[in-house]
Figure (cartoon, rainbow, N blue to C red):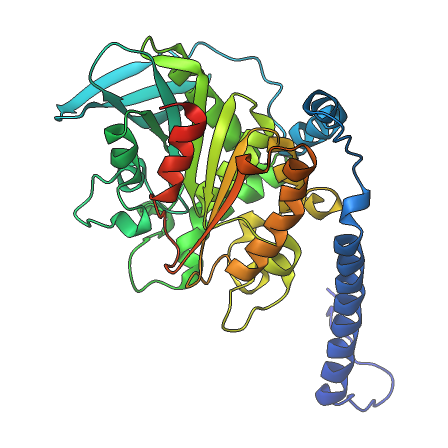
Length: 381
């Protein structure tokens, strides 16, 4: 048998690695600059990509109808026929102000999602609201059923809303968990990448199926809204959304697709999206490109969907942003700048009071003060 390794016919000098590395870095830097320049140009020309008619609320809604179709196509998975959810209700406890249940909903034929449901006592029709946790959070944290009074920054949001008379549903989105057989342990002291492995795992499988993972989950939230609106004590014409962090992302993205949401609070997410993606923020914020959050990158998003453009799909419905000056995830100055771009649609329509931003002195939190008043006003609680 011939030896697969055959010596060359001559003697050749190796090229120094330092030279190779210099050229490798040069190629990377030139392609990186090329992509950054294209993204910057895209960001600057964003307002020209969609046409808006703000001569009246009716004409405005007609003018964004095609844009919403683009948005639903971007989210993917929203055309699926809705299955029987076969709700299962597990009663947990009765409190002075509300009843607490865990509800299991079959959001797809082979996917069952758990939610917490907080129902104020009495038979009168009430506004309903989705209270959404953030990355690696839980419905229990979002509502306030934890040993930590601040609930990881949620400030007992779900409980406060229920005490104010809202029927609250808190759905469960995928976050961190322990998976022994794969060596996953989402506990303090693990490398940062470990915190995101569950979502990255699903994101990679979704991508090769041309599925937007968060869009898929937002469809699941729409099934929770189906259930919420079917309850005898809920007025389906008065439903809203309050979300923190990744839940704040849902609070921006979901009402842009789901027009049953009449008022929304987006906490600790809304931002000037392009720099948040790709430009390191120093002491002000952490860009996604500097993190392990692979699931936060979506195929082709910045061709059409910056945050203020997504906000334009919520208009003319009520929308509030909460931004903390100490928040290193969503830099408040960029959030304010982007919010002004979106608020102009409300101003042009003469409904500026429906778009509000609350800039507070806290960090990555649900403030749960001005926002609850905002929701009560626009959902007539």
